[in-house]
Length: 204
Image 1 (cartoon, rainbow, N blue to C red):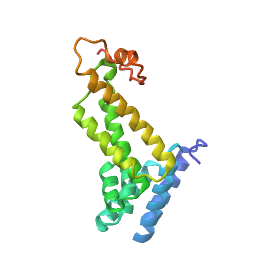
Image 2: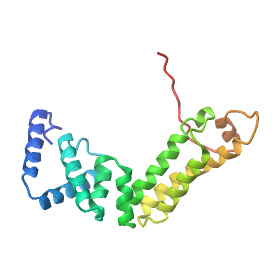
Image 3: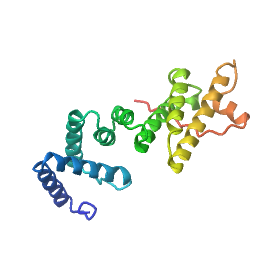
Image 4: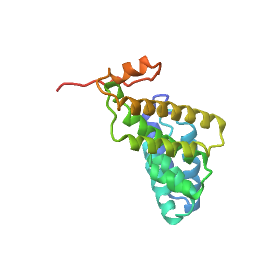
């Protein structure tokens, strides 16, 4: 709040004071705070700089050690996945708690984001990497989406999956043809609508 009001120095001082206070607490209290703040940050990601950098450093340290101390506890792995942006941690948490909606969603998203990266040059009729990799990513995402119970998340991810699946299906057909027009034009002629990336190249 102080930072939003333009009181940057006071805000930093307050955060640093809180971090110092947390370090003086018992291990159980530090872990409770790490879990609560990580959850708050995850569910309010739209709030600008809700978790300041000193807090992120603190949380990452607490969660990393917690995960080492309790490797079979999914909680520190899950929140370390969020705080550190680490998909491997999400996957470890999911292996321990297969129904966790957050982990299911984030790992599914990582697979879909992989396909998004592979397809971002299709506007130039180029697929990055092998098509089998894209197919595997889509299959993995679909398997995770099927396990989701939250209707809104499941519908949103399913729509995104189906979009990329249709794009990859079109590319697979297109890549067998010879001497055809650019992929976006070919798709348009078939009545397929995709939001192709605009790729800009800069000269040095």
